[in-house]
Length: 358
Image 1 (spheres, helix red, strand yellow):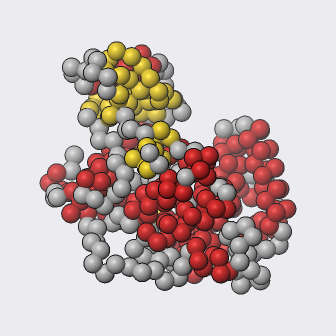
Image 2 (cartoon, helix red, strand yellow):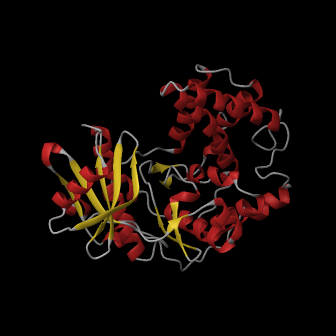
Image 3 (cartoon, helix red, strand yellow):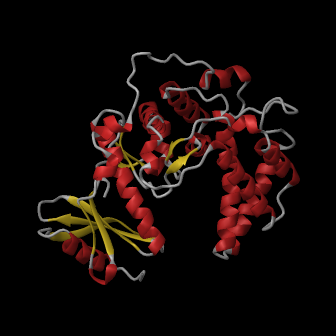
């Protein structure tokens, strides 16, 4: 597939995919990361749309899986299982030259930011509830789409492979290697129930309106896996913001996860290895050196402290937090409403998957 798609070309594909669509202007978003091109458009009635075109065969297959997921998320919102909506494609077809085009309405709201989160505990709590609800959806929400599915043991093995791969690229500070290898070898840390995972969260992943999350964007990395992967990013926030987010998140989940905080910290730290390997793959020395510098800073910060409390010495997830604070933020026992509905994908969709799958 060609990756030469200008905004005007994308707009033309949208009109071909959606007969009767009269475009009067271009707007945000526009991006082209080499695998997917997106362009915002405005029609004659003032409605905003987004047209997407995959630029590789793999991106095309991934987009098709995401379309199914977005429909499931939208139905989950309609049924009250999710507090946020997802864009449902109104056109998803192949055009000339075997080009696949997807058109969906632009969701309301503006991308969130750390500044907004620090200023509004209501918004931070809304973000936490949104992700908790996503993680409480049934595994079938991902399994039915064809997106990747990982067991808890497969998650651990993939992270071990990530560590080994990084060692072959650069010298990892010995104290960090020991800290991570020690945690990854502890199978008890990875006793969790795989959940639907977004996989690429940050403040700007949330579309917000009036201090409330209206939608969540960019499900390109969605899969069934470790819910802690979706929490690593929040540890970069201020102590008050991250503590509040994690408290609301854990209170909103149906089932407790005793090692959630430690795995979230592990995911946050291993993100530096992902950045290092990304630099290696694109042969960008600036990215590689940046990753090495961050690894050195982290090595100096954590010293010889283990990631898992009790291995040799206690190491809290939250800066300057004692064990009582961690237990307060991430309680071992939660009050679960025995009358709360159990989410069943059949309830969400009201359809027979095999008869109605596209």
